[in-house]
Length: 279
Image (tube, rainbow, N blue to C red; front, side, top):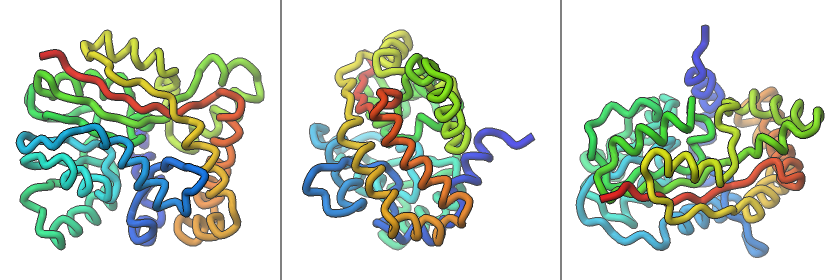
């Protein structure tokens, strides 16, 4: 039987060689404003927002989960100045590309890319000053396992910094059509139903684990409408088909349209989370 993790890896492996060279290798939904020029700017602005209030560490180790091609990882290293970063992803093609890029930038001794399951995290307690992830936890099996394990491996005072996709289970299940479409999209995108929870529910979960939540901000209005409009334009559809193949390319276009549709019906949101492990 194919595992959930293998399904996620297969989904992101299609067209990986081509996708890694587009838009600087970003994979997030991005942060969209009225003056946003293109997808790459939106993705850069999302990362900038995530890190803008964080101070340089000048010590310690950062864990970057769901690192993709490593694009965000290198910027995290430049902005936060840790001693080193361990960056993990479930997709081997992502890791292979990121490792090569680290070698080309002469950073392979500072940034280590590994294929790993973020719900397992085989590290000792107190190993990391930060755990940073952009959108990955929605795919994890499950988000709760990841958050509990993150608490274990963070040092006292360590920071969990995330953006993530939110599904309001009550809204999604409130009408048969909503539920059917939501379930279909979640299956295509490999998002376990256990991860369907609101921002207040995630805050409650984090606090039950032992985190102090500093920020739990809704950002859906600045993410989904812009991303949906961009990805349902004809040039984006053609590019998705060329890069990922017709089935996955059209599937991604459908998901992009659905994200805008579901957001307008309050079924989904997008969260910015900052939580701290008590000293």
